[in-house]
Amino acid sequence: MAALAAPHPALWGLALAVAVLDAVWLRRAGIALAPFGFSVAAALVAALLALATLFGPVLSEPKLRAMALASAALVAVTVPLAVLHYLTATWALPLADARLARAEAALGFDWPGYLAVLQAHPRLAWWLALAYHTSGPQVGLTVIALSATLRVGRLWAYVRMFAVLLLAVVLVAALVPAAGPFVHYGLVTVPDGSIETMGALWHLDALEHLRAGTLRVLALEDIRGLVTFPSFHVCLAVLTAWALAPIPILGPLAIALNAVVIVATLGAGGHYLPDLLAGFMLSVAVIGGRAILRGRRARPSGQRSEPAPCGSRCPR
Image (cartoon, rainbow, N blue to C red; front, top):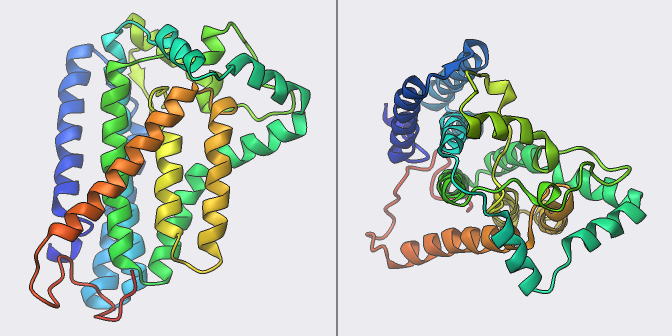
């Protein structure tokens, strides 16, 4: 079992604890899970863990082991947190759109005016929306790149901070729910030539049913991002840029792309400016907090918290 402990034993404990909480909450809320998608996710995690075992002590393939183990951890954490995210929407707390819009206005940002610019430049809107949609694929790219270059310590840190950020965003969004600026400003379409996104309009039907208590069956493939404040897309953009930064060529490209993703989150993601600022500050706090903890942690010379499968020369 020690071979499967990375990225951190507590991460697997978090996934299990949230899954148990989900099961209890679903039962009390009278919501059933459509089994297919969740069964596929569970089978995928099991298969990846089996591969991690095979590529670890058996075949000694550190790159493939790291790739399989990180992927399994990301799926195992993301799925129960996604369900928890939906369940918290059943609290139906007052929407915070008016407060977020006022804060945005106080910052001097005109969201409808920004959207009008995108409407006037459909090609720009299309490219920004395309960049926005790269966030998900970039997670897979990060796992592959860090595994392939044997930056295993950085890979484990990426997975752990991904989980911490996702949990934090789910909890904050549960207390500060919002429908998004498209709803608040009475807009019913995304900019011409853009790409429809989960953050803009697709989430509204699910949000309505959850808040009304009328959702009875939840399918994994139907889960959509309901978070407005803070923006997880921004958190993920900052975290991914940090993770890939040390890799030659790919690092600078990732930083540039994720800077565009952050800008795209306003229109393509349907976010207020305070959502972006909160997501940015949260991700910087988590990354900075890790750096502080690492600096203060006293370890005997040469001791590692996670035995690196590539030895002492393993880059970070």
